[in-house]
Amino acid sequence: MPLPLTDETMISAARELERRHGEIAGIVATYGIPPLWQRAQGFETLVYIILEQQVSLASARAIYRRLKDRITSFTPETYLAFSDETLREIGLSRQKIRYTKNLAQALATDQLVLEELPGLENEAVRHRLTAISGIGDWTATIYLMMALRHPDVWPQGDRALAVAVQKVNGLDTTPDQNLLTAIGEEYRPWRSVAARLYWFQYLDGGSPAPDIEVSSV
Image (cartoon, rainbow, N blue to C red):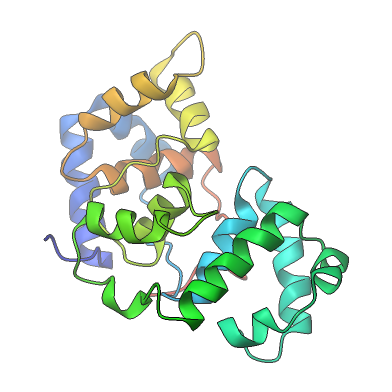
């Protein structure tokens, strides 16, 4: 499989996309090339991505910070020791309590072994993650992009991506799943890089969460 993105390959891929696609060239001309946003591999990152499902980045970040303040060691076993009532006080919905505890239980019992995921192909990683109730395609894709740094995945279920694609490409409406997937095909083998560039446009050249989400390679 292709090697994970690095600072160098991120830049070279962005330049290649810039040469091939006028809409990408427009993003780069306005905002430049974003840093290689990434997250650490592991349980904590997957919990954070679950918290981000269908809520704003700011809301997920606030809940994550409160959780970090309460947890002494971010392990599946420690997390399972939290009562549902405590997690609701922190701000997790009943659904997200169930999803995150499903994940913690799967890791604690070796149903899922995250250390086995690096080096696997996209679909193999996706299959293992989505076997856990509460981890859907979007969550698996974000983990592939941000933690494993796969170069060619496309988060077609991501609202920010759809909004950015509409604006950059001058579409009358926000693209549906089928159209967004078709647009993403144009950016192979660097769909992850194209998505990051679109996110950079959506964030107006800013960072998703500099104090939590971004770290250097």
